[in-house]
Image (tube, rainbow, N blue to C red; front, side, top):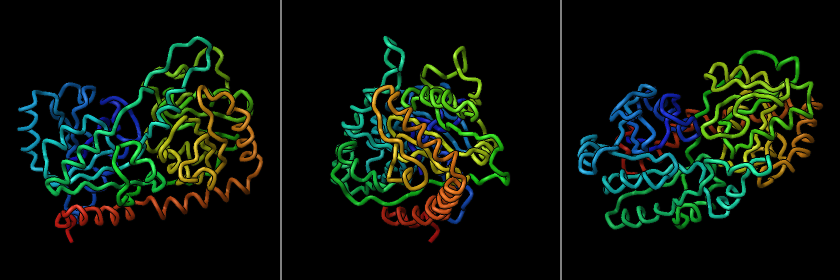
Length: 384
């Protein structure tokens, strides 16, 4: 199976985001479960991935880059003899793979579709400093070319399936991809982070987990820290685009620490000891950080509420456009509530962990993936 993506969750290869995380988790899961009979190869033609190499290895999986001439790319891709393509969401440059293998079934793993309304909201983003240059990384991406892929696939009876870890995203598919609503399979995330056997930190601690990019609005986390000087605020992540607060500097409150990108063990320790996860993003699908925090029994405070997850297992502060400074009072209200009510925190954390274990486990992923293989006409790959 070829996993098509533009990032692969490796510091050597560019940005560290949810799409790359998903690619890594799939490769690890299928490699560790031989009963599925699926061998994974990563595929990309993103110019900023692969360090100029045509092939490398990441997460014990071959990563093949297609940045040569078109005929050479076609020859090399067809030599892989792929039975199935899994797109980590969809980006226009995926078309090369889909058109080059016109009869190979496609699964689109819908993760963060953006409708025109979503893109207009993201376009409102700005830095809080008056007169600051527009932030990077918020340009709209037109993904409606996937509709043409679907149309051409129907002509040759190629299966094109859509799956998602967040069923509430079904209503966004037509606006984001130009594809009329069809059956949307459930394919959960693979959350294998477990809480560390330690109590919550003695001093209240909250965590920001994700890239410190403008669309995450990390400056709101800093503003929140100013209002809670007795609370420790940890940034876990690094910037891919300039965010304005990617590094600590003059004016940063002393209770804020920048940890940079952290490994899985350190991430588990930080989330397990935290009293809350804080998310200040302008837009989210179903953030992996939400699921990892809940897996560690840590409730969520967020400006986004995808599928009602935040209001169910934390506090939804409400959605605010632009720089988002108007959100700070509501974020402060939610954080105060979570900090002051220990029984509430404990209940939300335990209920959240139970939900993640039932819904986004490796076993649940494997069962759902088998269903997709059968629907794609590739049941022989599942070992069944």
